[in-house]
Structures are given as structure tokens and as C-alpha cells.
Length: 245
Figure 1: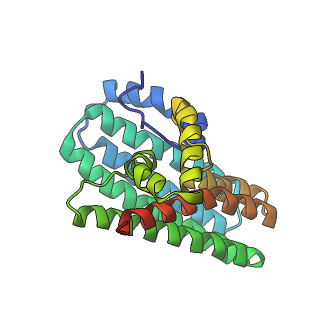
Figure 2: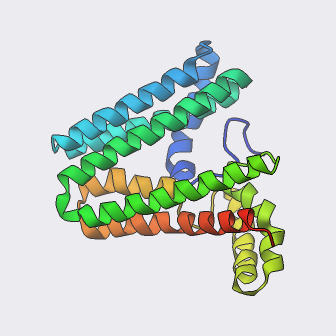
């Protein structure tokens, strides 16, 4: 049975690396520290570490940049778990907004720093940013479409796939075959709370942790390939979700 502080589904990096560290920490902190605003404070601290990581990149202190980012990643995995353990709806909603804004701005600052320092790899970093932009836009369109239809949107990729599964199967052809194949794979990997494919968070780990230590075009290509499945799936779901069949 899944613990209440863990997400139903998450990326490989979160499940294998971050959750084993942050899960016991979240439980311990929640028992010892009774501060209502704690999840928000942890999110702000995570943003600060991302900002410092970007600052270290600009000064070409790459080992320090990676360490700072990893601290940020741990804090980023910790805040949500603490919020779920507190189970305060108002704090959770406010924390969710602050967390998304902090992550987006923090990641953007690090991306800019990498783009500025590794100019010889600028085309690959730009490609990554472009794919990320496509993913975010398709995601936003899908959420907005659900709201306009009067449905409560799901922010989980797994739940969204299940919502539109029948539509994709009805469409027939290659889309139906891919849907069936992916659903079978998802039913297996969901037992481990993760997806069959690498996700956005896994690509960020490659880009923000591995690339500064191994700054090569090959590393960036891996980051792009890790991001690509999420982009393709998001585009398909948005197309299916906004089209009248």
C-alpha cells in the first residue's frame, strides 16, 4: 500500500534516488516540527539553492553547482511530502503554486547559466528548451480545455492517459495500437510508481547534474532523448483532448 506522503506516480530519478532520502526525512520532520508554513519555507529554500547553483555555474565551479542543485532537488522532494503529511488544504494549494513558480524560475535561471557558459553546445541546449516549451504549452492547453469543458483536470500523466484512453482506442490505427502497448507497460511499471519511459524530471537530472560534470554534446543528446517521450505523449493527449471526434 502506498504511503500517503508519496505521489501515485513519479519519474525514475524521484522514485529511485530522491524518495528513499526524503521519505523518512519528511516523516521525521513532520513529527518534530509543527510549523504550518513549513512546506512553503522548504520550497523557498529549494529555490535559493537553485539560484546559488546557477551562480556557481556562471563562475565555472561545476562540482559546487551540482552539489547545490542536489540539495535543491532533495528539498524539492521534501516539501511536497511534508505538505501531504500535514494535510492542510489551504497550505497545500498555496504551496503548490509557490512550488511550481519556484521550480520554473529556478530551472530557467540554471538553463540560462548553462547556455551562457557552454556556448559551443548552445544549439543542443536551445533544442532542449524548445522541446520543454512545447511540452509546457501543450500541457497548459490541455488543462485549460478541461476547465472550459467543466471537467476537473488531472495533473497526473497516468490519470490523463486513462481519461483519454477510450478516445484513442476508438480512433483506431497506429494510435490505438500504441495506446494498448503503452497501457500494458504502464500497468507493469505503475506497481513501482514510475513510468515505462524517462520523464521530464529524469532529463533535468541529466542536464543539471551530469552535464556540468561531463560537459559533452552526447550528454545533452541523452537529456533531449529523456525529455522527448513526455513531449510526444503530452502532444498526443492534448490533440485527443481538444479535438471533437
